[in-house]
Amino acid sequence: MDPIFAVGDIHGQADELDRVLRLIDADPDAGATVVFLGDLVDRGPDSRRVIETVRAGQESGRDWISLLGNHDLFFRDFLDPRGMSDAEAAHWLGPNLGGDATLASYGIDPRSADIAAVRAIAREQVDPAHQEWLAGLAPSHETAAQIFVHAGIMPGVPFEAQDPDDLVWIREPFLSDPRDHGRLVVHGHTAAEGPVHRGNRVNLDGGAGFGRPLCAAILHGAEVALLTETGRVPLRPDPPHP
Image (cartoon, rainbow, N blue to C red; front, side, top):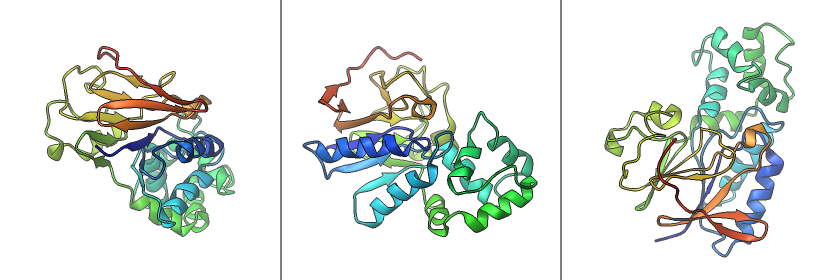
């Protein structure tokens, strides 16, 4: 089966993204498809540069696929007058979700005006190409051996019948379900202390949004290896559990 790279939740950590892209370019399978698992924005200091790096790479012809994460959805809906209420928008700008850092990366001070005015400013100031790019993010990518999603899937439901909201938001019952999903599910969304392999799923959200290293892996069918500065390190499955 063709090799494929996967990159976990970046959360505005542009320097970490640069580091991981160097690892990918140095890997023996450089040039294979790269899947970014969503949550490119929020919390970290440079969401704008993260979006521009991935968007520009795609425009230049790199085989890069970027999936929709719930934080990317927050940003998209913040920019859409009908996407969320002003109360929901204010919540996104709070310290827990980190939308204030995303706006700051575009030179926007979320405290400079009332929330409706800040949303209007953002629609004017966020690069139109970035807004178009956010609108085009897909919730999943499939291969013969893997399913790539941001959050996970609803166990026991055929993939073609999955609720798109679950692909972006689900935690339970997905995380604790031990059953074979037919293909390896590769996801992020639930921050851990590092990458996690449960046999039926691989979580590459190692907590970059909280200052930990960004995770990237190379997959050959069901075999997974982490990319490091000293080369590949096999990621072995543990028994399925949360």
